[in-house]
Structures are given as C-alpha cells and as structure tokens.
Image 1 (spheres, rainbow over the protein chains, first blue to last red):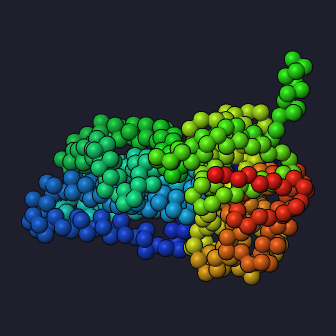
Image 2 (image 1 turned 30 degrees about the horizontal axis):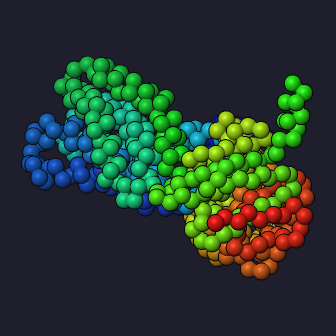
Image 3 (image 1 turned 120 degrees about the vertical axis):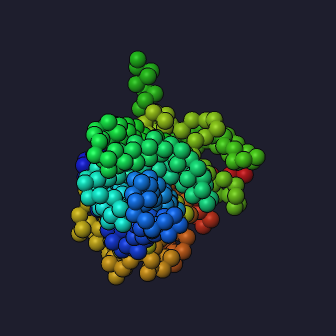
Length: 228
Length: 215
C-alpha cells in the first residue's frame, strides 16, 4: 500500500493543529494571559520598587513561564484522546512518536514561542535592563522547548486519568527544575554583565536530549493511555 | 521445507487463537478463537457487557491480551504491528471527528495520514454516502447519523483490507443501513474482511457471513 512520507506526516499534523488553533484562538490565548497576570502579581505583593523587583525578575519570569507552559499542557493531547482521534493515530500504522513530536512542536509554536516574544515586555515591567533581553529570550526559547517535550511525556502518561492535571503538575514540575535553575541563572548572569555561555549550553543540551528521547517516551506512554 | 511452504499457503489471513482477557476482576474473554478469510464477515454477538468491544480492541491491537495469539498472515501481531495497522480500518463507538473542522477537513486529515488523497475522491465518497451537502459544514453542526456516515466514509477511504467495526450502524436510519450494507458487500466481493460487533445482524444469509456468540 502506498503510504505518505514522513515529512508529509509532520506537515499534516502541524497544519491540522494550527487550523484548529485558529478556530478556537481564545483557548490558545489563555496561557499567555496567565503568564502576564502572574508576573504582575509580584510587584503588587512584594514592592513596586524597581530595585527590589530587578533582583527577583529572572526568577519571576521563569517561574511564570513554567506555570504557563504547565497550564497549556492540559490541551496538548486531551481533546484528541477524548474524541478518538488518538486511537486512530495509534492504529494508523505510522510512527506514533513522529506524530506526537509534530504535535508538541505545534504546541510550542502556539504556547512557547509567544511567551518568548512577550518576555521582554514582562522583563521591562520588572525593571530588567534592555541588555538582558537577548539572553532572556534565548533561555526561554531553549527552555520552553524542553518544558514542552517533558510536559508532553507527562501529558501522555496522565491523559487517561480523570482530572489528571494536578497529577501532571506533580509529575512534571520536579523534572523541570534543572531547566528553571539554568534558565534563571543565565538571565541573572546577563543582568550583571557576566558570561552566560555555560548555562545556555546546558539548556541547549537539555533540549537536544528531550527532543531525541521524548518522542519515544511519549509514544510508549500514549499506547498505554489509549488501552483503557 | 515443503511442508512449511504448504503450511504458509494454507495460513488464514487473521487467526485468533484462545484469547483470554481480564478486565479488573472479571474474566471477560475465555479462550475466544476464530479465523477470518478473504471475503468473510464475522459478526460478534452477545448481551451488553459480554466483551464484544474488548474483543474488537484486542484484535485491533489496542488492548494487550492476557494470553492467546492473534496471527495476521502467519505472523504474530506484536511482530508486524505497523504492517497490520496499515491494512486495518477501525471504527470505534466514537467517530473521531473534530467538531471545529468541517466534515471534509476531518476526512482529509485522517485519510492523508495513511495515503495521499485528492479532494475529488473525498467529495465522491461524500456523494456515495449521500452526505455531500454536509461536506463543508463543521462536524459539530452535523446530526449523529450524519457524523456516523462521515466516520464510515473514513473507513471506505482508508482502502484497508480488514475492517473492524464496533456497532457500525448506531444512529443510522434505514436508508443509511441499506447503504452501509451495500458498502460492506462490495468490500467482501473485492476480497476484504470485516469483523464487527452489532446488535442487528447485517448481510444475513449471504455466503461468507458468520456469527460468533460470546457468553
């Protein structure tokens, strides 16, 4: 039987998910608004003094990005599993790991990339100097990619669990800590004008690691999840 | 060597041998066995909760069995999963349609995952199933019967040799059932195989149509 090429498969999944996102863009916006709101809570709760905010800015932006990406995970696989699409994918005879990777890439384009683009705005609001913007964006670009992949594995594992979102958070957040540590540290170093190559390289290595192994873990977890 | 070759020729297409399945505390499938050859339709019958859907899911490879073998063209299922799935079209209780996509987009995305497909072919299938007026409506706007027809359209377009259909005629009207029986008959004529669970027997009295009763 003639079958579709792998590149075609990836394009197909991405095109489908982008089209779905356009049709209910309000749901796509929610994690972004969440990100913006969390970062505005800190000046309200701690102090509006920029000096004080500047000290905690890298940590605040990074924790907010982590929570926003966690919030977005809920919509990664659940709709497809609930309406039976995932079952069809499992039975399609195509590499499930590749299909799920394409889904995570689209998910990152819709939830991770906007966070990266929004981060200078949020950083500025917290008193972050303009010189730290490139590093902030670079760490978030690498870091949210890792968060999406790790979160994808967690989401595939918990997707069949009723109200599994708390379990997902408990499962994924501890694993995401190294990404948070290196990400926030790199931004902090950049704000003090120090070299950031070390933590940035580690973030890139983490991303490569998760992208290369994550799809197989996701596919295995998903096969178990659709059994029920 | 000769004996082996002869055995391979006599090998049935789908051979399910003594499948056992537990769901929680219940021993659902107790040594279920059957074979399916080209042009045959096997209807699994039995009361609700007896394990018809579970049997179909096992045979589709969605659910691992406790013991027993499922053999596809002489190879155990776990050794040829992808090849087997490329020959398989599975219709579940749920239709696997995205409410936000149009009926046509739904079929396009699900069929193109398996093989390249042209718009005309999709529209021809809609016409064949008499739902051409629904093609460009979002799936959420369709009636339950229309959604079922769209899902059946996916089965037809997949061009698989083995159809596994779980209650395929749910929500179909009598015209829809007749239409679907026609599609099934044509699939059997061209050497296809069908395994279904249904409360209402389809294509009764036709050669190659059998029932399997679960207790």
